[in-house]
Length: 275
Ligand SMILES: [Zn+2]
Image: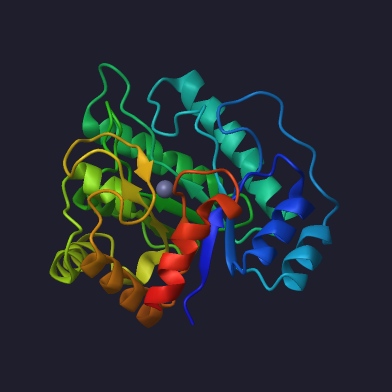
């Protein structure tokens, strides 16, 4: 069975988010535990409460996306410490939310820092986070500005620096992959990308797919998600992705436009029809 889920806003509270996902027959879910751009963090339900709600709705895994307002690849000492502090707290919030994974973007190279210094700084952040309970997924980025971790060779190097850990895996975002220049029109395109993934990140590290189309063309290095099959993502590639999701038991998370699961009804229908 392929588990289809989506990023859903928690603005109406965590319980309402899970109810809405359940109403839309989602089988997995991604949330932000707090505003991704900063501000005061939101209060959390009691421990065990989330696990009960999720079990009642048959939703697993729960991915929690890390906030963006800190830079985990910062080479400046104070900024690096701040990222470790905020993301360390987030690991504990994921635990209280009965989440399965914290999903992190590698961040960006600061002015004056070499690519490899930024990678090392990010790897140090991850090693620090492993002093907390929980599991981490590192997501490929669209390569905007000075973002690191956009091509999979770069991500592979980052995983090598961190070293093997069963608590660190990968999240693959299809819109970001297209932004960096990997076409996803045909099934063959997808197979070529899975070959790249196998030789860099390793398929065994992958724990989920962010399944998104892209507004801007392949290679644009701009990060704007589009509804499925309205951009450069082709039906052939989409079928290939579904076959791989089935084979490897990769949950699929839609981050297509819209804040609620209902606003993704058409994307969910496209996937259900293909399945
Ligand atoms: Zn994503």
